[in-house]
Amino acid sequence: MLNSKTKESYTLEIYDYDENLAKSFMYAGNFTDEQLEEIGEHNLTIYLIGKSGDLNSITNINNAVCSLLKAGGIAVKVESSGVAHTSERWFELTNSGDLVDVLNAYVTILTDGNTCYSCGMHNIGYRDAIITTDMPLEDASHLISTFLTYLLSENPVLKQGETFSMDSNSPIYLLKQEECKIYPPNDLFFNPFGYWRLHVK
Image (cartoon, rainbow, N blue to C red):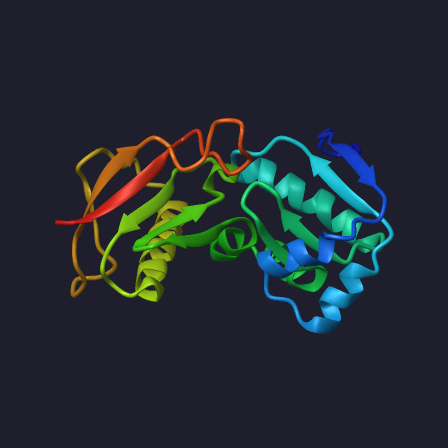
């Protein structure tokens, strides 16, 4: 698949009906029963493979995916983070120009016990974020989302030992760089840039 204007090209892998597709979308996004039924009645599954790792490449991928959706696509799943969207939601997220929507399109926040972490920031060229905490996981998720939004909107040059706080009345977190050890290097979820671990100062 070639964009004649940008000269960006992508590999398409096309597969026949997948009986497990609706189930994989159910676990990866917020879908109604009717939407999952429609996904379950698909004819083809198309994998779009191409370069990512910065906002410019993500914009090009967005355009390619939108073209496929306009040709009859039902929904999108980002295999490198596990998050999924309906076609309507994908158009909303990728056409708004809002960096928060870029996060919502490509990044998900996961929990493991009392650890909360993001997955998918490598698609945009950034470290993911992780925190181990006793706070409610909903609050930890909000903290990580706020921190990632700060990274995208401000693009700060952060260093080991610097701090972050959501506002003047919130706790201050010490930032520590970590390698990605949650997923192996050959996993699509693996972030080669690593993580920012947040510690209460």
